Structures are given as C-alpha cells and as structure tokens.
Image (cartoon, rainbow, N blue to C red; front, top):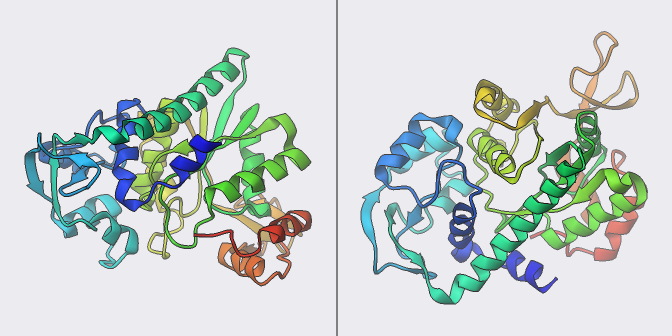
Length: 334
C-alpha cells in the first residue's frame, strides 16, 4: 500500500519519471527513450505510433550533464499534428508546454529517483505477470480504461467487453491528473465495491502507472499500444476517449483506431457510447436497439458528478454505490 500511495502522489513536475519508467520497462511500443527531433517528425507523420514522449529542458528531477540533441517544438504544429485540435488554449496542451518549447535527448533521472522509477516498473510488471498467469489458464483478458466514477453506462461497456473476454481488468491510467478527475485511491475503492457486490471473479481492478495527456484520438492509440505491451487480448475504445473540454468529436477516437486496427496485435472493440434508451427503457450501447427510431438520452458524467457533490441521487447509477460514495464526503476529486 505504501508503494501504491507514493506513486499516486507523483505531481506534474515528476511526470517525466513515469514516461522514462514506461519506456525502460518496454510499455511504449515505438520508443525506448525520449524522442529527438528526427523521430518526433516520424510521429507527426505516423498517427498509428500514438502519443510522442519528449523531454523538456529544465526538469528538476533529471540530470542534464549529458544533454544533447537540443531542439525546439513548434506549438502550433504539435497542436495540429498530435492533439488534432484548433483550440490554442486547451489546458492539456498548455500543460504539455508548461516548461517551454525547448526539448532534448540525453538526460537521465537523478539517482535519488531510481527507487521511485523501480517502484513504478515493479507495479506495472506485476500487472503484466497477472495477465500472463491468467492467459496460461486459457483466459481471454480485456482492459477497460476509465477515469470516472462508474454509472450504469460504464457498466454496460464492461458488460460489452465481457461478451468477448473471460475477465475484464478495470485498468485506469494512474499518474498526475487534471482538476475534476477522480482520485485513484477512491476509484480503486469504488470499483472494488462493485466487484464484491456484482461481478466477482469476472472483473479485477488493477491500474497501469502511466501518464494521461488528454490527447483524444492519438492517445486512444497510445492507450491501446500500452495494453498490447502488457499482454491484454482486448481493449475497448468509445466515445470521446481521453478527451477533455469537449474539443473532440464524439467519434474521433474510434474512427482513428479503426483506421489503424491492422497495426495492432491486440483486438480493439469500438463503440459509439452508452445511452439510456427512452423507447426501450434501458441502458444501451449506441445502435444496439432493435426498435425503429429509438430515442436515446445521453448519460451525462458531469451531471452525475454534480449529483454526487450535492448528495442527490442520479437515476443512471446504482443507488447503493451512491450511498457508498457519500462516506467520502467531498474528498473524491482532484
């Protein structure tokens, strides 16, 4: 538990230690080190490579004595080629350039952070070994990426994944997060509550320690590649995967992932989101209904969050789960 908490408390100034650990652990398919200018150019041209990991100058936890291959990154080009957005003041984009637009290769983490890097890798290797152990028992394993308190729409997606898999691992990306995201220790308790009550051995909660970039379609590919490296058989990508501030079209991530499906050795399931069907009076995955002209109602995650904070029951989430959440008062979100 001490290891878990220490990793959870990594702040934005140390997020590059997580990137470094992931690359050295073999989780990043197309990178073994931070990119130089030439290889960043390759990522611009190849969306199927996912999200590029590059190191800014001036990060306090790195030793820059071996600093070499310095280069600057054009913010507008990075925004267009990697984030695929027009909004110049998108907060995750601004966060990416928080240390300026000068980057480099060569620096290594200072020795005092080696133990933390080792812990990050140990936790991810434990996950990898768990998947390998289950697959040796001929189990088909799927990964469900999440960063939200689950309503019945999220549960519907888990049920979709269980149609293809023997076991679904709820596998959130754990690293520094934006304001409004659920705290990882809370997310763990919430999903373990659901597992105990409803899912049993078919669902396991086990995070992967990596960074969120909120880069929509490119990050959906990045997430899929990480799950491929971990050994998962299936990964699910849905509506507005890894987006924020409503900057992405609802189907941008699924369209891009489907375009490059042949590049993955992991099976990707895409869907158009979960909704409440007023016609059928049930939670459905888009295009699941057999009736003609069904009326679909969006299950609003932001409205669910407000309901939780205001202690008002949300109609599209389990009531006993909401009662469970009330014990945490307002200590749920960053």
